[in-house]
Image 1 (cartoon, rainbow, N blue to C red):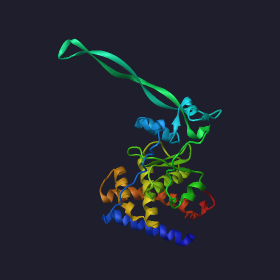
Image 2 (image 1 turned 120 degrees about the vertical axis):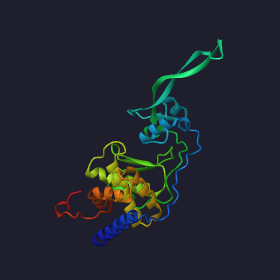
Image 3 (image 1 turned 45 degrees about the vertical axis):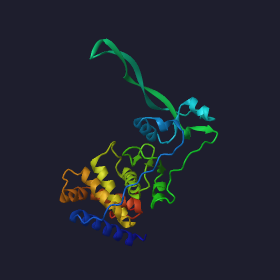
Image 4 (image 1 turned 45 degrees about the horizontal axis):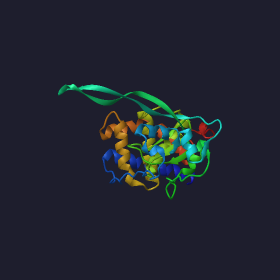
Length: 278
């Protein structure tokens, strides 16, 4: 994309997105897709949702205890650090039967949780085991931009309403869908993090910046079916849920949006003093 034409294309796409949001003339939405979990017998398939999320945050889709890895012919590498999942501590108690005081029933209660050390597949070596690939047949546009910023992109199975995230500490984008909008959103987070270090959690300003960038990139690359999802996402984080309120929220963060898009698309800054920075 030539620099001059690229800037014009971004401006045109941004204006078109804002006009769609203002008028409510938004193309019909495509259905969201998720990546199905593999059918292997790895232990984590039977973990609780919370523990599966802890595993994903650790940057892997297969974590096991020390002896579990030994059982499949793999050893934990020297110096590897464990991450922890939570196991309930159960206790059996007897309670009186309300209908028959002379009778007691035994029930199991959870009195707390304890941490169980597990190790990522990436921190082990030894026999090869079947590891399904979750990557799409064709990687999304701009995947090379993530590489430019030293960001690793991983794909894994869908867990509840978890479509993806960017983890600044490990510079990792984790995706549980092949939908290009989610990749664009997390890529925008990664680029935004190079301007202003991201705050933890779902920070409204950061989410509006990332989703506005994703909507513009979807328009540029012809993925119009995701614009509706972008509108609803930004609306969720807007204080004022009306169309005019959503537009105001976008204009409030437009400087960051433009700078993030510049970084992603490799365009020069409009501020000449910044052209050699970044």
